[in-house]
Image (cartoon, rainbow, N blue to C red):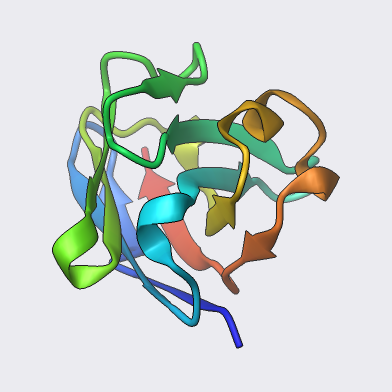
Amino acid sequence: QVQLVESGGGLVQAGGSLRLSCAASGLTFSRYAMGWFRQAPGKDREFVAVVNWSGGSKYYADSVKGRFTISRGDAKNTMSLQIHSLKPEDTAVYYCTADHDYNDYGRSPQVIDYWGKGTLVTVSS
């Protein structure tokens, strides 16, 4: 059974930093692209960032470029999202995801293979 467990969310002041982590189990981690989505209150889920199976390709939503950095550690089946310069509009539940196809992250969130339960990030102004 595939499990993706997020951690690291919390309440942060605008301009602050946060590091989200995702621990994966039940899948051959090195064969999957790993990514983050987020969902703000009253809004649809939106893509945030993705890293391919090797870590050699990364892609970010325009709204987070230059502030968010995605990385993966295959030795420990973990993925991280380092966030700097947080803004109130970054407030959302952040979801860790895994998918067999890196290109799926350019499509609907519904095609993504696996999802974690999410971790809440709240940014105060």
